[in-house]
Image (cartoon, rainbow, N blue to C red; front, side, top):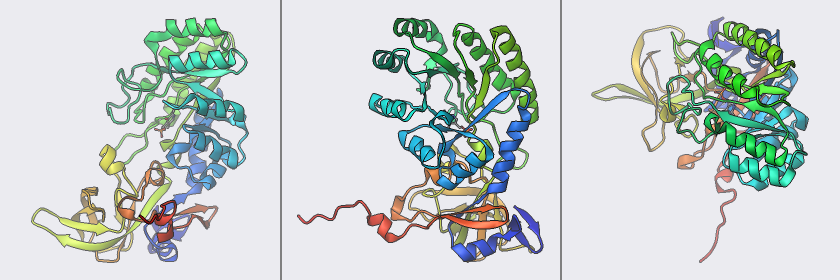
Length: 410
Ligand SMILES: *Cc1c(COP(=O)(O)O)cnc(C)c1O
């Protein structure tokens, strides 16, 4: 988003005009930015055999998935429905990694039949897989290295009491199962969580994976998951991709030399690819002074963007209707009957009823975590790509709220 030619714009298009054309609340995605993030990652790892597996769950509109395909990524899916979405937009099954957690074995069988790579996340599942398929279907194993990424336990999934992955302490047990069933392990995976600050955290996970990998002789790839950090607030550190790329690539090459084979290095970024590309445009319904603060109540809330309430996430807010004038301190809240603070104590250009506010960094885990709470409609989604705007999801209607409800007479 930039302030040029008397308006806040993306790809030359004024946000206030988009709000007028499509209505609010409205998710707006900058497709060119997504492509440039993919390219940044590719360049950072240009010295190794890189495969990017975009984490579908971050933003799963099929047109975004299509854009990823065009940009040359593969996919990471965490449900059979996500696998089906990826297939729907034309990904080859071989480009899809399925990383299930606590799903039924029937769902894993379904994924095997669809031909995607399965990332196995528990020893019982590994045994079940062995009983059913033996070594006939290659697999990946998800290990938990017990690293607390970024220190936020809500988004870190690699720590000791996390439900994800097979503990690195259970490796001996894993090998017994692998041998007993003749399993073909072609990949090892770690995903430590969504707040990786620098190369050091990644390298810590990497060293553990390298050590484990020496005992698996048939590997084709190592998968380091997602978790690259992007800046949410001014002064935030974002992952220095060049630095991470250089250091991790060097360590990976050293490992490949000692392993005796040039493996592929996989990453599964969600946030890094789509967070900064997205804005949620909302309209100020009411400006309400109270003894403690002045609230701006907007036509959205935790039903559309749950991250502030769920993770204490910080999202920048800009009053895109006002280019000049005094600034005041506001707390921006939603219209949901629940405490739903979107942003507390922020300096915005003086807000009047009807002003359009842009909530930044809303591309990842925004729409994909939205709900119909309070029987509210979910927003429309618009993709900007190559200087054009495309409606990629219609705003819901009241009929959608009634859909699937069964009116019975009793
Ligand atoms: C959520 C998830 C990711 C993506 O995490 P980001 O923080 O968005 O990069 C990658 N891999 C797996 C297995 C995940 O569950």
